Length: 239
Image: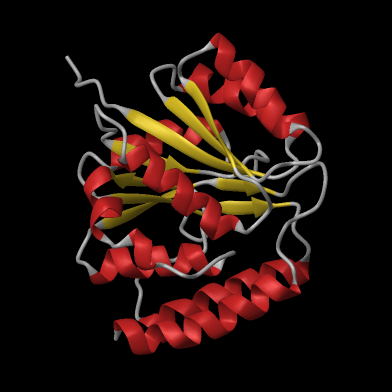
């Protein structure tokens, strides 16, 4: 009989009221034993209130309310620190987006991969992975960015900027999260770099990434600029 594993999915949100209830129901459909932690940045559209109501109906659903929008990295740090503080502890911690660009059907693959590896990564850029509904400019930007990150930091991961990952608990507990200053998309790169420089093993699994249907992407010029210079600085810290 397979061992029951305690797993939590951490989801940062900002203005995802139209999607969050469906996403949560889909997560629990595919993985009914999982817990879910939403970290909401005081969404003006009431995302936090939607999750509050859901949490009253299920003890599998929890929410952290943050007082303002202060970036993806800070939201993840607060979420990770919260789940690491829980007792009994979670054995596996998954991160994913709230807009269905990461489909819940892949959660089982991510979890199963960490039976033999410390980290699993949902990858767009290995055989079987793909991206739907991106224009050529966005595809080229992402491809070139990942190539630059791999070469500059000496990483072997094909999709260094993926935000769909599963970690064994000890990985996040041991990479000194409290010292991470990066925010935005640079946070994903710094966490990955710390994990791999600490000697943790990884495996990428192919996913189909779908551009969000409603609203607009949160990737802007500032995030791109911050990530570029942040990656430049990371090399001196980790190599």
